[in-house]
Image 1 (tube, rainbow, N blue to C red):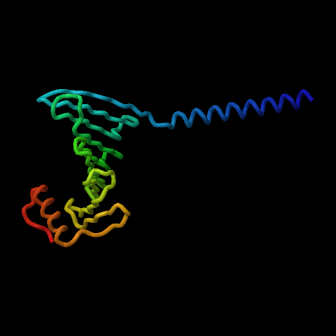
Image 2 (cartoon, rainbow, N blue to C red):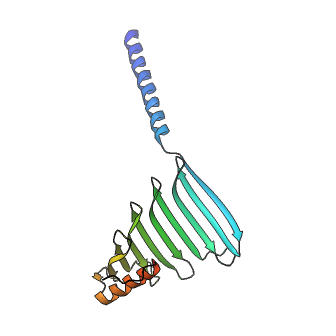
Image 3 (spheres, helix red, strand yellow):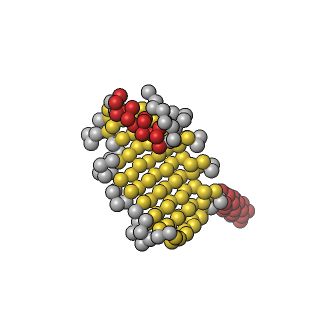
Length: 172
């Protein structure tokens, strides 16, 4: 009887030791996350930058900017990174309550969406080619219906992006 209790006790102890070792392995596999915040004031502008690092690799960067040098924020820029490459960029125009989100793949812009009427619904979606120029655009209505921009509106959009991108020729 004592021998049986000893064996049971030894098996329980072994199970506890094994479970503790497994818990230690799981805990040590969790990534280490660190957040750094910096603030600066120069040229009449206030800027607060919040960066998040996972295992010492930058995973997100948030910039809050005041153009008047006060603590009143006018713009918020958010960037997300995976393996050192930006995958997401968001611009929030706080004074206008307007947001533009950009999505990246392999370092190139491939999709952008915008909330143009400040209601929180992203009405405009633009698809980009390998040269980061628009190739198609869509509008989403409040009921969720999606339609393509007209050929004329798409051409205007392409011309605007060509000018912004430093390209003078229009794309058709």
